[in-house]
Image 1 (cartoon, rainbow, N blue to C red):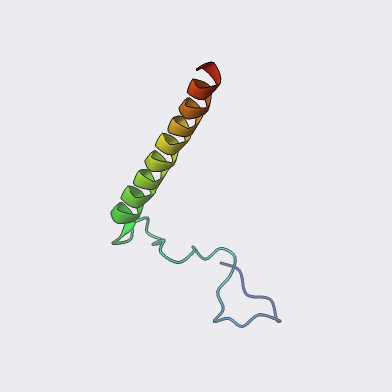
Image 2 (cartoon, rainbow, N blue to C red):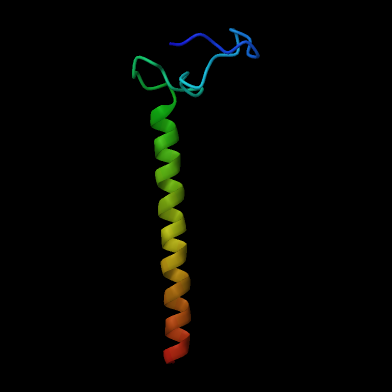
Length: 63
């Protein structure tokens, strides 16, 4: 890692530091599985709502 520029505190980190929740060793955080499940459920519900809405529109256009 390079030295921080003079206008940065050495305690602020650098652009190469990983974001919060990411272990530099590549080990997933404790709640990574839960977050993935919540994201999967949210995407599934959104897709089902979109399919239902488009189906409703097409059905009422034909009928």
